Image (cartoon, rainbow, N blue to C red; front, side, top):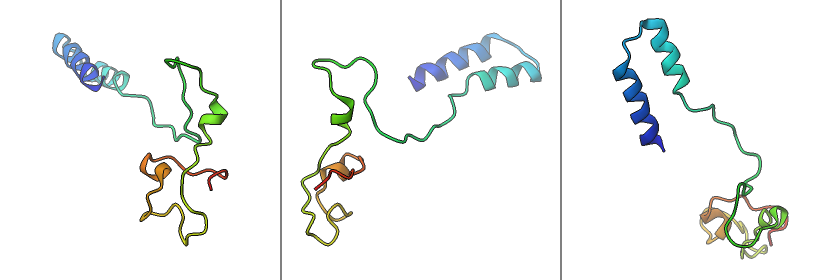
Length: 92
């Protein structure tokens, strides 16, 4: 997608000979949208197969032992940590 975006921008810039104001307008219109920090990682859009309950999918439990010193720490084999998913309050 990024390559298509860059190719389209390059074609627009090559075919037109705009002045400085127009070139700034073109450049700003080709920028991606601003970054928005996610509060919760939820699936969206149409999913293949069965429908997933969003609340159920956000409650992914890891297999960490809660009796350990740092159950989901950096030196553990926490599945959520490996998948870059935050462990929720329902984790063991």
